[in-house]
Image (cartoon, rainbow, N blue to C red; front, side):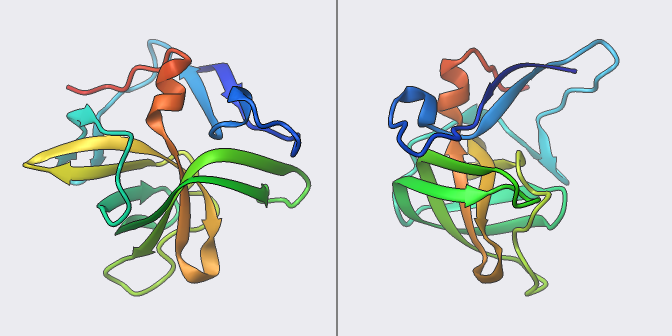
Length: 159
């Protein structure tokens, strides 16, 4: 696919709407396969961006796989470096989630960015957002709520 929109604030003095979230929107081509499956047997069926503190959410990342945890904070402004340490981002509007997984290993790491984060509610899997970053040594993940991308025209596949 082709990246059609990208938001990643590199100006720590920027507190405007362009400082909220860290994400990209990709226009898929006919050769791309689109799915709403996020792990074996699970499908995203809707969205739920404003998840309250204490809510259990789930994530899937290409590096560490499936994990779950509770929302510990909302509306955070975090400054972090990319995986190579060459670029610094100051991102607002993030959620923090304390994670665990069934193997007791790292539940989030570099390479999980962009993976889905969802809550399970009355038999439905509702997309909260995407993995943005974290403090990997303590399994604390930061997420960008999906409504920032939706505001820019992103439409998640729901069926």
